[in-house]
Length: 224
Image (cartoon, rainbow, N blue to C red):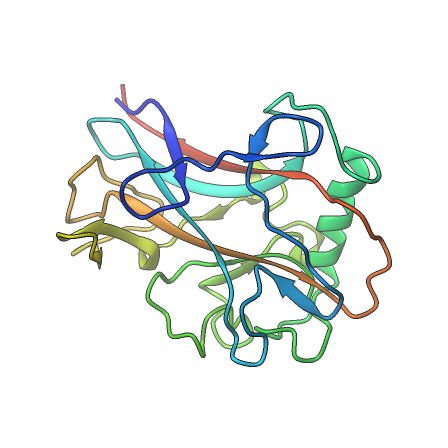
């Protein structure tokens, strides 16, 4: 039976994200995004910068149907909103950014927007977040106004991101990974964690400043 998911900032050992959030509570702080770029940012021209999250669980058997979506801040956490507008408006902002987004991996044309997900753990720096050529592994929340914004439209976690520690903190692909399945601790076949990679993009014409807050949700199923 699976019980709890951990969203870790480290591959190993687990270090659950606990950044202090405006309004109270803890979660993930993506940092500051500027128009025509993305966050986290290391080098825009070289397509460098990403937020890593490692998804694992404490069950004794695999979980299935693992997927992810975004929703209005405070819906599940109950945290007080501390952003610059309202929680409802922030969700609409994120959805609409994704819906209107271009597909430039490093926002070279200034048209990319919203929360993006890269689901191949060992993709090259050059190809990372290249939604234009890798649409089955790079997803944009709010794309088509409907994708990744609720449970029915959640993005399945892809096999290409399923990994395990093969020794000394070496991140290794599961030998026979499966979309949406994360094994119990030590599972080398499925992998025992999913390596999630994220960026928030802002188009050049973005005009809503201030802090934006929203919730990232991970879903899964298990057998009792």
